[in-house]
Image 1 (tube, one colour):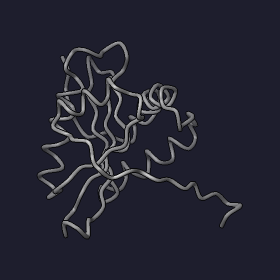
Image 2 (spheres, rainbow, N blue to C red):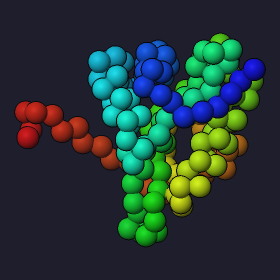
Image 3 (spheres, rainbow, N blue to C red):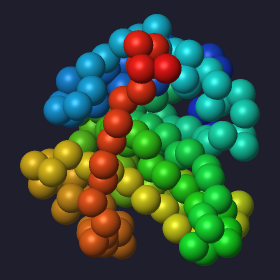
Length: 153
């Protein structure tokens, strides 16, 4: 049986396992468990930063979605950023991702969010198809990124 809930501090090791799977698939990111643990603890400990929603199957976390919160000047309202989403490879194709997304969207809507935005690798067509099925549409906006490291500060 699969259940859906908000992640807890004690879930961090399992969440890192899922993030490692995700980051080995993504072009721009490399797994770093120490960094991941620190970020996950910060998010889980402060609901105003964001929330992590998980799917558990027989007690094992098999999927996660990391949602971060901010405010939009264009909408004058709270909005969300979908930072990470992954379903364990062994559990794909069982509607766990869709059910987890439904769970997360209901939660963020109840919190007053008026929009959710995400980035996806340009060549990850399976992810694009999944998000389109969930009602997401491609934006005319183009993402730009600048990494700010200690040497530049």
